Image (cartoon, rainbow, N blue to C red; front, side, top):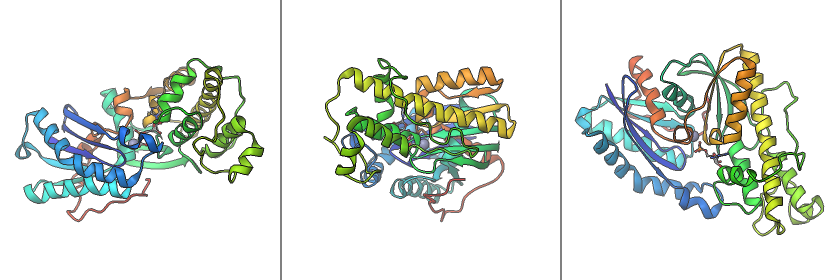
Length: 349
Ligand code: KG4
Ligand code: ZN
């Protein structure tokens, strides 16, 4: 069995060919990072236009690298939920067109389930049942994952996603986009105890996250609440040029202290989810899972708590099509999608 998997939910145009044995025959990711850099975040209109330009070359390259043609495939799979509408549409239309032209069956992928499946791919063995944690630019979700496509949402962020907080705080600090890697790098020289930023909801019984107040706390630390009130409402986005000149050490200290607060919140809730479910396996995915100190903390907690931890290598943490191998499970179960498959931008289950 050979499946072509397509991913275009946010700002990466990606395709991969995987086999029924979960072997990866080829994988291509065209990143749009450079296009969105100067805006400090993903601009949906730019993202969808870039997907349109890249989707066919990416698919061609993926098949060429695997040495395959469309006639060698058994199905085409595509992530149709959740994501940015314009971005999702490009991948879904491409997949449906390929299926209509060739008669190949179509498989719909849930992008968040696919992020957890990246752990299955990296582990090379079954990881289910497990607690699945997805921490990216768009999500901070905890799931009870009974099987690859059987997820129950345990909790999520009530405001910003973790990656979004990294991106916004990086912008406040004048660090380049994407903010996660920039903050991690700056934090290497910083003191994580210099500023005691809040850990919202950490002591709360709910399995939920909140990062918007943490971002505001960093803002107040930098410019003071008085000025913040004068320059805009409490939760206003950081305006460029609003941040005073900081020394390199101050930037490093704020970055390290902020990063420590986010890690405490994420790791604390992951541990709570492990206790609540009684499961013995934790799978973590999404761009923020690329954060080195976060990974180290998760490893230490897993050793102390006695559970198995799976965090994929960096290339499988951020968006990619290899994780679309979850389609193999659907293929085996005979769960195909109709050719009028729609996108579901907001569906999170
Ligand atoms: O999963 P992803 O590639 O895209 C989606 O949002 O779906 O995640 C991107 C997010 C960005 O917000 C980026 O700042 C964050 O992941 N990120 C990181 C790191 N690398 C990427 N956050 C913290 N530390 C990192 N090393
Ligand atoms: Zn993602």
